[in-house]
Amino acid sequence: MKKVFITCLGFATFVLSLLTFVPANAELKLQQSTISIPTVTGTPRGIIATVRLDQEDQINVRSGPGVFFDKVGILLPGQEVSVLGRTGGGDWVLIEYMGAPDNIGWIYAPYVVITPGEIPIVEPPPTPTPLMTQTINPTLAAQFIKTPISTRKPTFTPAPSFLVPTYTDYSVSVVPGGIPMGLVIFVIAGLGALLALFSIIQGR
Image 1 (spheres, rainbow, N blue to C red):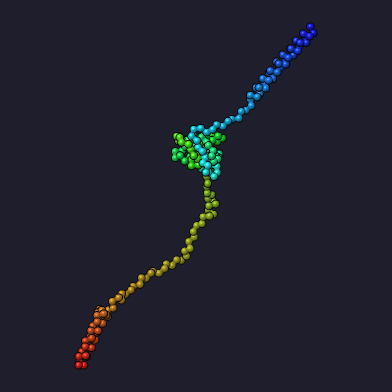
Image 2 (cartoon, rainbow, N blue to C red):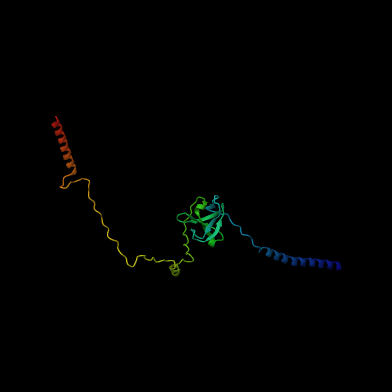
């Protein structure tokens, strides 16, 4: 009888140990299931833009299609991203860029190689306004503005009027009386020739 009692007591102890072990093990499993699982980044799909390998440096990812927009990230040579759209002229490409606002960004199209496909035209965001407008301080500007001072004397004497000289044309010599000098010389030479001829005839 005592032996049977000891056997029943051992069996009851074994059953109680199983009942206390199962909830503890179940709680342990529930705690293990709450461990965070790392997010797996998927590969780009659809139309792909690949940064050109001949780029010497990284390229900028901006919040809009233009250098006036803020830079939100970079891409390295050979890196691939998914293309979501483009501007009307096709100079800038809208890409999927995790970590940027709305997980999108813009890159300059000549820096990448795009796989063939139909890229939709998207409306670009408005051009950002500058944070501050440059203004000129009128007080400071007045220090550098010099008013020209006239150097004219108080008693200004005008210069005398310019006299145009007159010239006489002596290309044709004229003796008093209006007879050309050439005609007088010709007549005297003719008379001399006649006198010489007359003296020769008289000498014979």
